[in-house]
Image 1: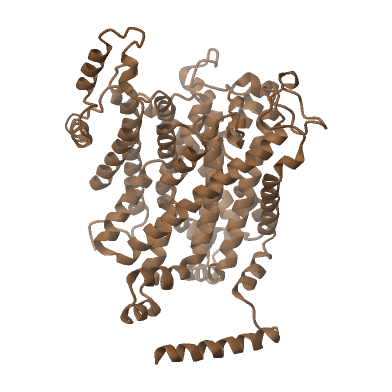
Image 2: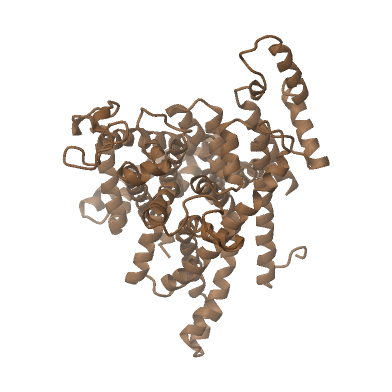
Length: 312
Length: 308
């Protein structure tokens, strides 16, 4: 885990230093040339951008590890970590809701498709899931926004709160959350229902299922008690592995729906070349992904008594 | 001695082959694959649709009297009609012809980027899988680390570093697009290198390069083709998303993604929805077709892994 984060830090740092465009330029007014060069070199000196790359990297990583200090945003001078931390809840709320919705829909679909394999409804679901992975999320988001907020006016098209009238804050946020979370969930349902289907199919052909059927257990019990619980296990790991993908998806949805999460911060920072923030978001996202995978592993061990970490 | 044997065996095999195929008992591998492929109706449909796309992209200039980069402000924002089947955009350009020329750009970018990532991913995965141990450990840790960062995030950063153009988009898609391929190929090689024929090649003293690329890799061709096909689909979406955000192909050059950019303004979206709808559908249908092709190939190339 630590070496993983170490490599991630090197990669994100290298990417940023490769970038052309001088971030110090915005500190100096190009109109007043007098003393500008001096000011510039003073700023460069202070930010350390004129030192060799490995020196800059060492300084940067030392600050993060020792003080949890990701530096300051070029844009407004605020600490990067502070800017990121205030955005994390919005992103996690969006992603969490999307995962929850997609589970509610994808798991029944997956079970049905496996039990009634190649039935007309299974084929329909297969086609729909292909549609789900083939539609670009930004296009789907725009179309949903067009229909549900601009034409029908059911949901607000952007932001996290505000248009809800006199609703209490939590309901207001929920009101704003429904559309972006459903759009994000749509793509997830397509993937998760396929995972669930193949995982179920794998389990359903096992000997113990045949045994259960042979001893006269009802079909419903076989499916839900014997097969379903075992089929759910691999899904946990898969969803852990899908996390980076989910962050990427959330990024676009946040941008389109003006959802004030980390993704929107990241895109905004990329456009104005705010390197410190970009590096910070990259690192924080990677840490969240690694933690997510760890949680998936732990959850797996909790659900599956056959797995015990630390004992072989 | 051994060479002589090989020649005799080959002669014999060729003789049998002609004999059997004359009697209709034998199928070439390609024919067998095609037979299995055509049983999947969606895959066949995907193949036909994608062929139409390619033809439309190649013969784009023949289809319409309008120029994709000619803007006539008098004709701005016209609804779809017979003379403008997809309508016109806010600059007065014909959306249909821009979508056709967009197909050229979008499909070339996806195919070129995929070619690069396949080449690099296969080599990376093969080397990592074949040499194993410390080499594999280090090479795969790097892949692990890069895969922990959302790939779209990396894509955005790379694209933002460069001045946006067609080639910068291809570079952005290629830089980290090979990770999945590398991982899959490495897994294949890891199991294939233990097979007897690989050991046989090793004891006859063939160089490692020849063993990897001549003896082992051809046996991993099925997953490589399938992943490459799905990579094309993903790259079409990725290019569109980058261009949509303004980090990919730049107007006036048409790409499906940048044709949707204007729809980011809510007024445009509500009043002139066709400027967003048609390019979006173009992307969706193209990606759907490629995904169906990939699915069909998966079943056709590896009958053992018959769709569960």
